[in-house]
Image 1 (spheres, rainbow, N blue to C red):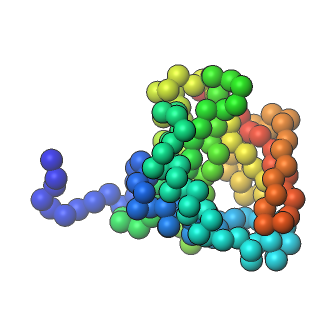
Image 2 (image 1 turned 90 degrees about the vertical axis):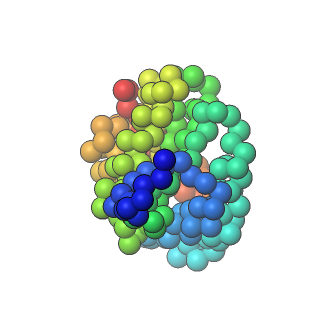
Length: 177
């Protein structure tokens, strides 16, 4: 039933819809440019293409590979300010993985990341997961502090990503529910 008063939540997290994809692509690029500054060459950050991310997120929202793949959107009033993507972790049924959790830099430190993380863990619990895993770029002290404050710890697993021609190392963080 629709509310007649026209009011809406000041901040919220909801399932992503395909109409969010373009904004999610932009948020992703802006968040990476802010968080990876000084960790990768500036030219690599300049090469990040919002349209590439938009296409990937549109596909993930429209045709998720499984019922355990989810996309969530963080909003400040009607404005999309962040997102998270969930997937089952490879080779383990009890772990859900947050494959992306990004907030536009203009809206950072306003609780959107914490709301997204809480929504992710709620969904993972409902799908039978008992562990959550997230990734942080090595050297991203803000992300490490955020994950630590949420109760996640590094687990000694590392992976390599290529970001616009630059090599980026990420470490896995995990927590048990």
